[in-house]
Length: 299
Image (cartoon, rainbow, N blue to C red; front, side):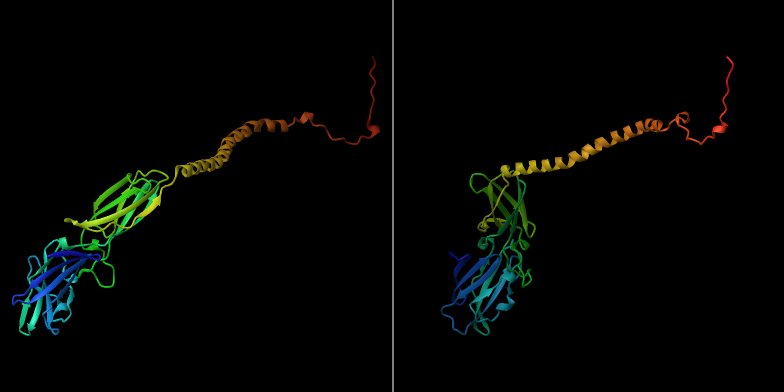
């Protein structure tokens, strides 16, 4: 068996021989739970047709409906598998005659063949708390409907590792590994220093086989708020609050005192206004001189 890497795919190439001596070269390519079988039978006639079958541990061999009596040299069997915790097998049948099929030796397809694309991350910062959101690549599987992205996390529960590091000082970092059971994974970090630039990267691995791991994502960075910016903002907030509260407090303190003085002085003010009748001058009345009588008393 020869193991080589082609692009992002892991290709397992095997020289397989049928029961009647037919020789074919077969390879399984795997990326993001995809399973593509390709083959070449050098001595086969150009008109030769082929059939592909799959088998899951504990089940009988089943034909792949879209790869029966085909003339092409490849078959995407990804939708045929649904349980990646078990061993899955693939075999190629060469139709030599209408009534004769030579079956090649089966190829396995399990977690040791898996390769993954890197996830993508996004970051959000609130004070000194950083939240990293991890999104997983799309998979091809029969449990996923066509025409939409089916994240790998819908099919398996991967181990997700997120690392947050100081961009200026890589020795300062935090790392969390979580068992992802949601479509999107959220990992939180705290205790970040102010005024620093922090970056986050993530990768994931198959839950029962850590060797089947994805590359790290592209880093996403964010800068925490500097103390020199945070302190003036706090002071400004305190100053504005004081400007609003001091006048209100002054009015509140003065208002009861003014009311008390007014109520205490009110009787005195009323008393000063009420003048006795004896002190009020009479208004002048016209008098006839004839009505004036003079009396002289004999001393």
